Length: 150
Image (tube, rainbow, N blue to C red):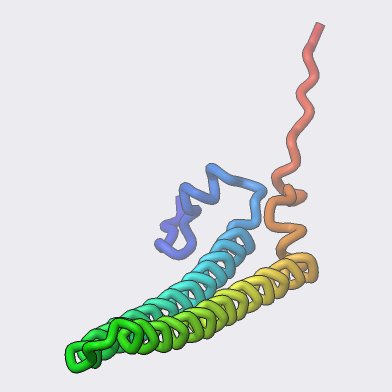
């Protein structure tokens, strides 16, 4: 019996899955993990952008509201106070609509990029020859027909 080196020895995984193209299966899994990583990065980048914009929006809104009430300390006329606050609320409403539009843009850009990534993966998988043959039985592992003797 000849000594086999470790590299020449048959792997238990190969014995267990004889006839399967394990290299192609591992390559497909690696591509899938890469796509998941890229999509996760897109989602995290979008989440970070949205969080930063939310923080900026809330900070500026609080500053506007505080400024409106500080101005009112000097004013004695309720009508003047109301007019100042109405202007601040109108500015806040405009800021809110701009903010919502920016958030929608970030979200739609993220979704668009994720759809593009998914479309690339689908196109790569349908064009990939390994995709079709990774789980196909090889000729050397064809099942042997056993006949029953009567």
